[in-house]
Amino acid sequence: MNEACSLLGVRPQTVYAYVSRGKLEVMPDPADTRRSLYRAEDVAGLAKRKEAGRKHETLAANTLFGSEPSIPTALCAFFRGRPYYRGQDAVGLARSANVEQVAQLLWGAEQAVDFSCALPPAAERAVKPEPRAQRGRVAAFTALAGLAADGHSTRGRLTRVLHSEGQSLVGRLATAFGAQPGHQPLHLRFAKGWKQPAAVAELLRTAMVLLVDHELTSSAFVARIAASTGASLPACLLAGLTTLSGPLHGDASGRVQALFSEVERLGEDKVVAHYLSTGLPLAGFGHHLYPDGDPRAAALLALFEPPQVISRFIAKVEQLTGLQPNIDVALAALVAHHRLPADAAFGLFATARSVGLLAHSLEQLGVAQVIRPRGRYVGPVPNAA
Image (cartoon, rainbow, N blue to C red; front, side, top):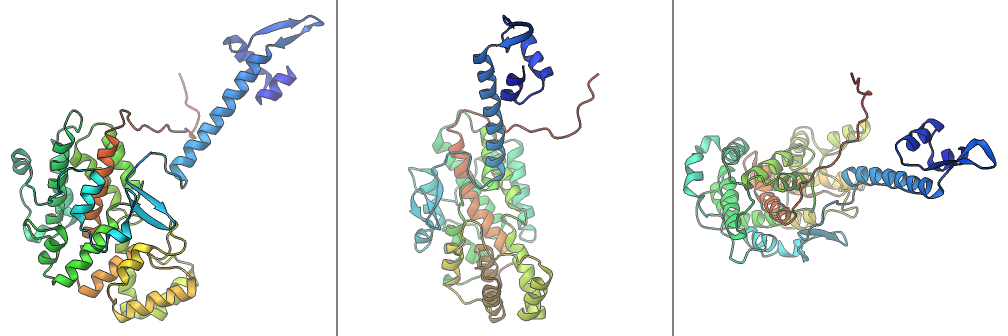
């Protein structure tokens, strides 16, 4: 008994329970009838299953909350401190490609992607165009919610049909965030909607390509969960974008914009001194995936000169903390430099990332299994009647 308890890491009562449930074979000890012998194979098998269970629990927790991805994907990966879209350097693509071309790459579309495509007639009737005064994230989320409410399941539909619907969804999002309707690429439509010249349109193109995807982020994971249930594409996209809207994710540039407002009001010296003396984190600096600096931010910041006070602030933070600006700083600096609409940073991020979220949703359709993590209950013992 003592040896069995030691191998299994349990008390004698648990060993008796294993015997009563038929999990352990027992027989009297011929040398001492007061003792029992337990089949060695049964004990070893139980011990192995218990260890596997502990490893599975640890693996599951580490997979959800650690740094390793838990879902196979061929869309985006990190190699030598840079993001790659289907094996192509995202920073390199941003030098010349537009969002439409990256969407074709990530979606595996046979035809060129056109985000000016209209929604199917029934869907167009379901959601009326928003007046200019109401454009922004409220208009974007409201439009998606209306489409998600009566959207068709992704199951049993051809990929090319889903691609067509995805194009319409991204185009509608762009319009909701202020892009001018039309048949031009998204970066030109945004520039016209925000009354910006061609030079700024090029900056918008670069930023959007850099933002399209970033591997298995929390928003991509949520979109994949929705897709695994057979939810409609607008529902998958809405699930992903509502997650993206959090200040610790896609709306982090909003925190940086608030920080920039402090800098413009008080000066970089006072703001940096306050944050460092109180131990408060400086939004937009450092990135756990890029210990040597976010290459997306470096690529975008190299194309324009932020306002002087912001440039001095970035340099001072780098000097005193050693942390490099990430893409959220670059995006907020772009908005400040060209005086884009207040919600432009999130609008660009959400529209560009919608391409990646749809790519994850489409990729998940190839897996005939609902994503259903298990909970590990740590509350009070249930009071069973």
